[in-house]
Length: 343
Image (cartoon, rainbow, N blue to C red; front, top):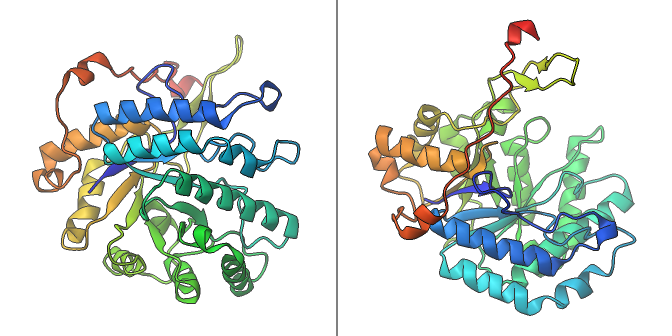
């Protein structure tokens, strides 16, 4: 079992996930790939085996005034292949999660067109990296638009309009408000698309009353033999959201929402969830936590302490080396110190 995190590393100052410059500064895929190569070096040093790349790796990919994205990818074939080779040498599982504006079942045809282009470009980059079948592009089913069944039909129809090289990269996850596990399993039955099980989303939206023991194996079965499934895990955020005020303004305190991701994983919740799955096929876990790789490293230590049996299944096993000492983690910035009662 590999643990992964998404996009931004918070423990290393200056380490970037992609070229995030504004469009007027002409951001480049080649620059993003330099940042990604640096990220892979960091992941190797921390013995982290899975990483979700930024969906903006190709900057402004679908912007109407940006240069032709296909040409930009073609111009970076050697750099993409190099990054792919580095990831394979590190035993690193890479993936993308399409942005929220990607809605394959959109009623608006222009939104659907841009969504198809977006996932196609992400799949094209994975192919150019030479990534194996475990490197996927995660999407949500989309919106309901007043009729859930018709929305699912639209998704399935557009899925079949995608090029085969894109379809084999695409996976769909259950969401926290519209499409539960049974609804995305319908998409699998109609298209063959694999399903990523999302733990927190299932807690929040489970219209069919499936237990975890029922839901997870159903999702695992949608993945073809020889391809390791992955799941998403986050504990819900329980803390109040504190936003610093201005010079003469108090801090603003917002109540949390259970759909917010926590800073760290609750290790006991994680263990209770995974322990019944220990006899299932091998799978990986993408941690969707605000403290990113810091939370991953903390959970790894927690598993060693509270569940050595699960810790023994982690890949890769951490190896202490000089690279660890050379790359100290940056402490997370403290929360505002103003007392909540005074805010």
